[in-house]
Length: 185
Image 1: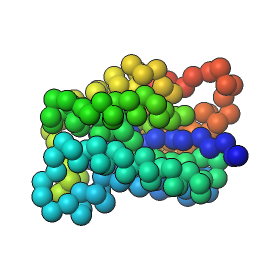
Image 2: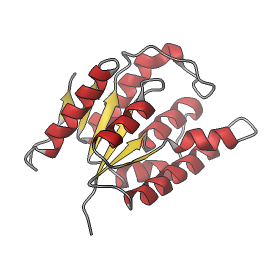
Image 3: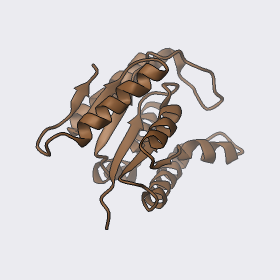
């Protein structure tokens, strides 16, 4: 069985996660997992509820499992369950315990936390343009508390892509005992 390193692209809304996920997958000639929430919410006819977040989390993990079969050494994931966990805590004050357990059971080899240095762009699924710093800080705390490998990726346009690529290259060539935490801070 081939070993696949999973890289999560995470962070607040409107930070370029989807675009950079596609770019990285293309650059590294591998597969990527789109954000399942977009598809789910586009097909929902009523306003979403907390139970929908669990359905989204399950769909995201199912999509990852399917794309893992097609991956070529790396699998890039456009968002992950930390996004759903944070959003549920913010909007509803609670999180389905299943989501919390899956966050802990399903770690990624590397998390790229997208900085809020891009302008916020309207999208019907985006809800909190004025709280970007608040959410960024929350994501950062979550990653630090879990003790995972992460890097903050800054920059606009090609610079952002170059910074992300540099982090991934460093991660892939680091000694196994060396953690990558907070590069590009």
